Image (tube, rainbow, N blue to C red; front, side, top):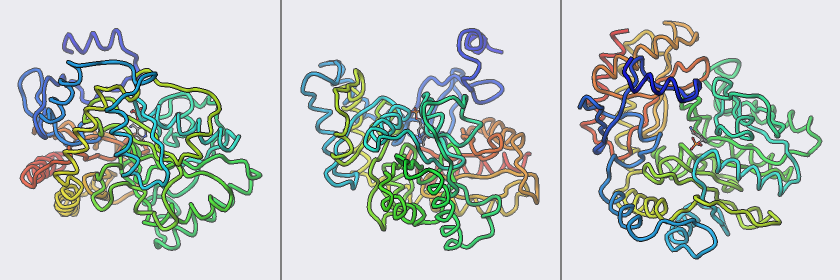
Length: 427
Ligand code: PMP
């Protein structure tokens, strides 16, 4: 164990997870690559979701942050804050929500917590619907929404949560259904649950593609079908776009747009990559919902000028360089290549995903039985080959997650796939 690792073990909580038997100390990054303290270079196939949506050390963002930090670092409340207003206008416009208001937070957890605050105040109810296998954060309220029990450290919560089928398709009794049958079964399940609640539910929260849950997506239109039921009952729909926003899924700018027939969500939450590493999260809601709180509420750091400068520079870069289109094109090629590798690798049960959000599910060959040890072994072997991967999924994380910075090139996608192929075949 390195000295830094033992110091980590001694002072930080045991539940703060680290990847790899010999954890990495990253020192710097460049484009789609990061470097460790020994000077080794890794192609980063996971940092795009963790933080670095666009590219590591993107000069446009670094410059904007340095300039703003050199001018003024202050709280985002009590005084007019130009970068915050600029970014709020752009996000409101992009959100697709009519008459939108934006509130900035410092994390996805806090964004979802704020969405719950709004929904519960608007509906005068603490009953929430969430999806099985979901992840929405680590606060006292959001752990309750997290249907993935591997990631929900306590069951005590101020909310009463009911879990709906639909987020995971490829396992269990729903696996053999057609898309239309699957949607009908999930809608029937939702109606059945609502029947038990006497109409008191505040909201349904859902990730359009489940992130921590292993990059699973329902058939297009599921949430539109849900939305019809919810609207009929006056219940709000919260789309958690923390992983799916800003074009990562390739075909759409937001994940909810694959489910758009019955209109946009009432509340949308975002975080992670929009600051390209700076802590920018937020909530968008139509003004009637956003303005339902009846006393002042502030955030000292949410919307700080420095993080807003990062968000503005990053958003401009990703729109000007059509990184959504890049996610669609390069992600599509990578998906095809990984599917070909998966077809000749017995422990690969499924390769799935959208855009640059791809998952490889590892099971005992020929079965549905999760094989987390093999997933971990592949992750270690890939690291040895110079490639960083994420893990996720229920059943003790047996899904390899691929979410590189969205500027990934075709050559880098090819390089990563080759390393991954060797890693998979070594297990
Ligand atoms: N929602 C989703 C969908 C997430 O993936 C995450 C983080 N993994 C969160 C919320 C919480 O975000 P944060 O870690 O910034 O609090």
